[in-house]
Amino acid sequence: MRSRNIDKEQLVKQKAIELIVNNGLEGFSMNKLAKACNISVATLYIYYQDRDDLIINIAADGGSLFSEALIRDFDPEMSFEEGLRVQWINRYRFMKEHPQLNMFFDQLRSSSYQEKFLTGFLQDFKQVMSKFMHNIIERGEIEKMPFECYWSIAFSPLYSLARFDYEGQSLGGMPFKMTDEVLWKTFEMVIKALKK
Image (cartoon, rainbow, N blue to C red; front, top):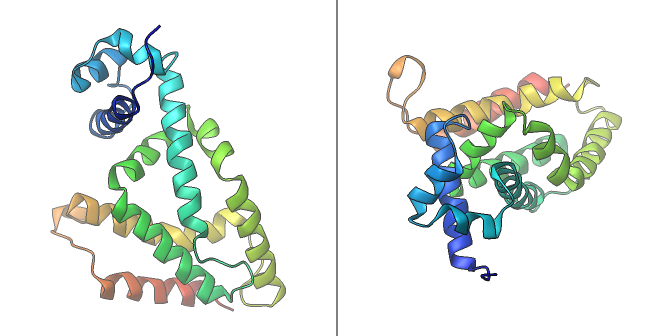
């Protein structure tokens, strides 16, 4: 049996992410991946049992990276505005440093892989965020609300701006480039919407 080559394995993951981002999960196959990597299909099966194993493995590795990025410099004891600012910084930095991985996550969120993708890597983050939410509600900084409502108001604007920036255009095809002014003006509006 041939041994694993770490560089080749990284190439496989990188090319798989690129193919999935560019062609969607439906257009992704092990044959296409092997061709993109200039290796035999049999070589892929040294690293992964099948297509699902490959995708789940990439999601787990990327998810761990994302989870670490989310809690960097974040303390659940922070005030609402300070904590949310750190979250925006961390998320935006991750999106800028790993744009393809971020788009790969988008593909997974709207697929049958969503449950496996989200359950694994977010456990530590969920505990930290749960404590943060409890603290800011307890201190009366925001109203008590379902987490989904909070997340939609707190982070959807950031993800929309990041997508516009990644695509280089906003709705209607107007050119768009993210600036600090746009980012932090949007953040101010989110704070106003959520703060008591």
